[in-house]
Amino acid sequence: MIRSGHHPRPAVSGGPRSSHMPSCVRVSMDPSASIEASRSRVVTMGVAGAAVEVLGRGWFRIPGAIEPSICRSMQRPAEAPWRELAPQVGQVRMSGWYHQPADSELSADVRQLSKDLTEPLQHEFGDHSAIPEFNEISWQRHVSAERAVDVHRDQTVYIGVIAVLTLVGTAQFRVFDGRAGSVVDSWRTLPGDLVLLRGAGLGHPNARCPWHSVAAPTVGERQTLTLRHSTRGAGWWE
Picture 1 (cartoon, helix red, strand yellow):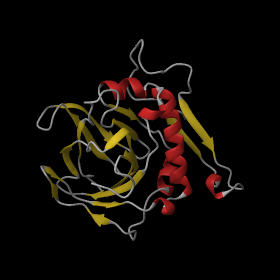
Picture 2 (picture 1 turned 60 degrees about the vertical axis):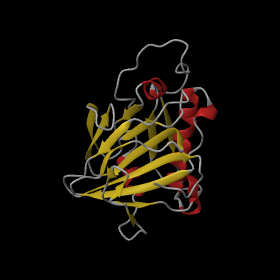
Picture 3 (picture 1 turned 45 degrees about the vertical axis):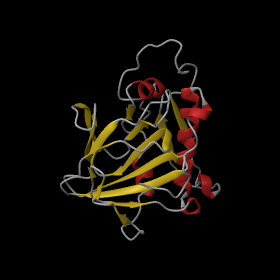
Picture 4 (picture 1 turned 135 degrees about the vertical axis):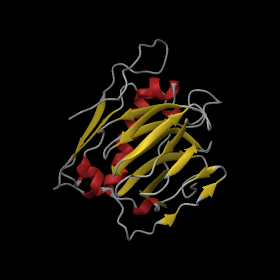
């Protein structure tokens, strides 16, 4: 089943290119082919309308963007070399773990996801230079606790689009109009849900990632996969 963005798309003129382009990308993976195409599943992502929403308010939600079976295949096991998140960075408190492997250690599924997401986003925004390829892919893992990550926004080294995919578990995702501001949007994430956030400088030199927070899962564990482009290059994470 193909799903597009959660919010209706407003009519615009003179903005980013958003017509005459696919509303999703579908990549069939034949198990008899090479390892890059070794999954007998289908990746489906609906990004039509993402440019208008991300350039405007700063975020775009795609419920059920990726098949749950593919999400499960991209989970990192408990014995992976997880590193504990710092309990506090500046004013931001957090709990959980993260894992950022070297590019050579990424699975075929994750590499394919990165490619399949980058190309339609570049087409949707109409400016390949504004949406660079992802060069930092990391996992985060959270369990039931007081919080997962407090209100924050990703640093200015992250440009283009920031993509966050829920692999397993559920949690409340909230967007705010400032660090100490009011909640302007809130939803419960589910496995396969994809959230696109505006990176620094996208569409305007002063543009920033929107303020957002993630609550801890109320039951069990939540694991996410985050794809970003860092101007400091791969290997820098915070």
